[in-house]
Length: 89
Image (cartoon, rainbow, N blue to C red; front, side, top):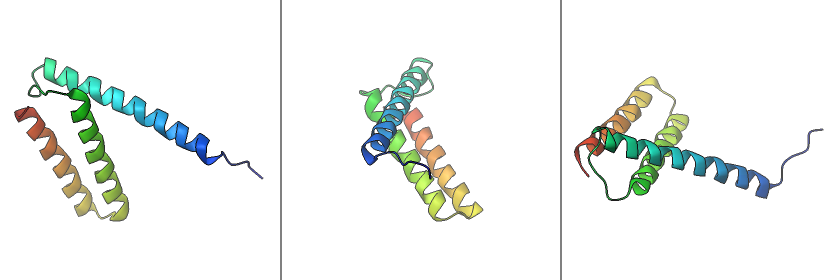
């Protein structure tokens, strides 16, 4: 029988992974701004949190409703949101 990790260990691992993902997203937002692909923003970390929340929402929606049309619609929503970020700051 395989031993299970305590819930606290699993939570720590998830937080660590999410923190690393957020750090990478923040760097990508900074780079997009410096390369002119996105409008200036007051707080790249805040934009990164919003992007992470949007991606999480799209992923949950895709898991909940696996139809191809729903997937395309959700990915189009994500692309639309990214295009808005390119235009506004």
